[in-house]
Amino acid sequence: MHTLDLSSEAAELLPQRDALSGWGLIGDINTVTAVNLAIAINVGGVGSDATAIASQWVGANQL
Image (cartoon, rainbow, N blue to C red; front, side, top):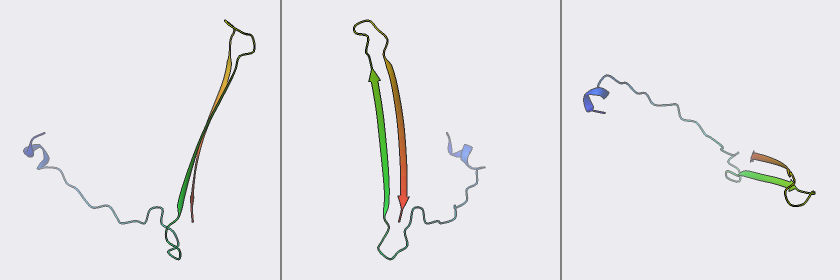
């Protein structure tokens, strides 16, 4: 992209915000927990079909 291509563009600042901020009493405490779980079962032996289930979970807490 050339400088001339940008001459017609305009930009503005986004408003300031406190993302994931705490109460300020004991600082900012943010916890994020991620869990991945997968289980596969093959009960028929060699050459048989297997059944699998998988789940994901992510949680975020702000104090």
